[in-house]
Length: 188
Image (cartoon, rainbow, N blue to C red; front, side, top):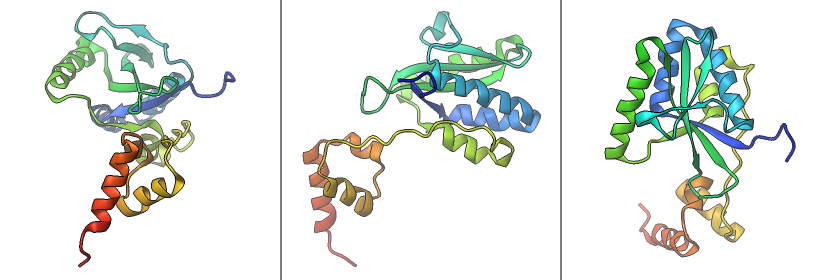
């Protein structure tokens, strides 16, 4: 693996995307700096400093004049592939009065009740945030395609509109069963 190749996929939780949108209204330029720091995680998944207390397992990156923090953790991907770790961004916010850390503690407590949060690829978030950030480009996520026959993957994508990631969670028997149920439904 060369130095320039991404080592991790960076994803943002829905809460982190909301944080970015709020920050964009205050200071669009700082969001550009935040994205640049997030790109660092693609190549250096261990960047930043570990957090302590209730946030053990999370890390922080400093943005700007030490005023903003990106709080994230490293996890394995949905298919449990060992090579592709996800730097999952949980919060982006001001350091003032530990605001971002208090918010993170609340999010972690909610996670204990609700399970793993939904997360979006950094490339999609940058694109959705608008053309102001078009100069910032993250690496696209590699497609995760299971070792199924090509016809099966194609049928799942075309007939059931399943993403490669969703398909990767299925066993071949489950995938064939889903297709059989779909094809067995009467057409209207």
